[in-house]
Length: 476
Ligand code: CTP
Image 1 (cartoon, rainbow, N blue to C red):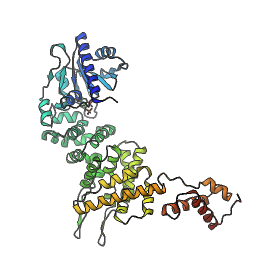
Image 2: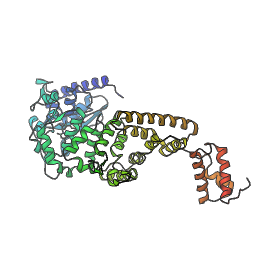
Image 3: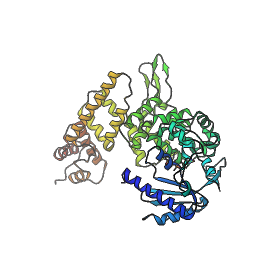
Image 4: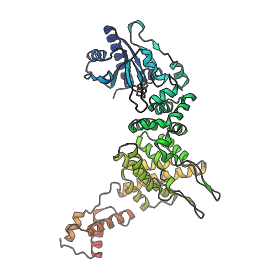
């Protein structure tokens, strides 16, 4: 891993090399986009360095590649007239200054060569259109035709052109606007917000993968609720995550109200972000209550219920991941498992905790146990200070109890002390359902605390259970 200082040194070397090559080739070139923005914000985040050249950038890429020791071979993308050089952890992207025009049903522009100004015009936001000259005559000069620097200082997201044109040209920019506002804690100017609302339907032409990429970035901000609220208020969320919109609203029947599960969910997400950087745990927080909308019922005796919402929610996770082309792999299963178990520790925290209940939780949760408790703690959003304290204290007790039970009973990643093979040998059996019955009885007895998680006790129970169901020992 490169530390920040070393990274800065590397960048400096790149900039010097670039300026030298630009000079020797007599090209007109500029740094542009994220690298300039992040530098001005005093963030050394950008690993992508975008260089625009008036004319072809491919020759510049080839020259720079030779000058940077150990740089990988130049990758040329002929149809776009762009080239890429990877050096250490930096990606240098060389593009030709261009004019672009978009067609209404595709995000892919038709590209023609243009001037620096044309290129800046077609960029998404004023803060991303800032360019720094690499040319000998004015090296280091900031070229800022749209007052992007002022917007950076004032924390404003604004488009260089009429926002309706910018967003309609490339609807992904609606997500980018909200994502940048969320990441940088900036405000999107009103005109832009209006244009986003007017163009929200255009997300139909966007690839799901790109939308999800932006959602991930919003999810990784310190308080994702800001980004999600902007998505909701501007008509995007209902088009990508309608399940969350369904959670909105408070209903009252016979004087009984339930909480607004949409705002509750966003609070849970913000809470969990204080405790974890893990993207998927954050997703689980966002989705943990989605089953509540389809399971909501009112009963005059017990009030509002959401029976089985955890199970229904976990099924919805699959559909949602599939629809958004998110990975249907162990990440999805992890989120599903957290959703399906999301109420289990709460029940334990509310009741007098028995060892057996804790053992069952540890056994069922396995690897996700800590994350599950973290989720449940984040789920405490009560505004009643006494209750807030009591719930948190209860979870502290649950954590202590888990530690105690874990040290003693080792039920996480449970491996039965008596295996199926031992049962078959002892009773001279071929594979049959009786083996499963005995194994289940042993597991249950351990989880209930009737026997310790040890070989002798489990073996004795195996014999007893075998006799109970009419088996005879093999004589070994
Ligand atoms: N850009 C644009 N419209 C888009 C995507 C990108 O105008 N839909 C322009 C912006 O000028 C942007 C530059 O291309 O600064 C580089 O894009 P990208 O690398 O995707 O974003 P960065 O701004 O570098 O920021 P981040 O890495 O955080 O996405």
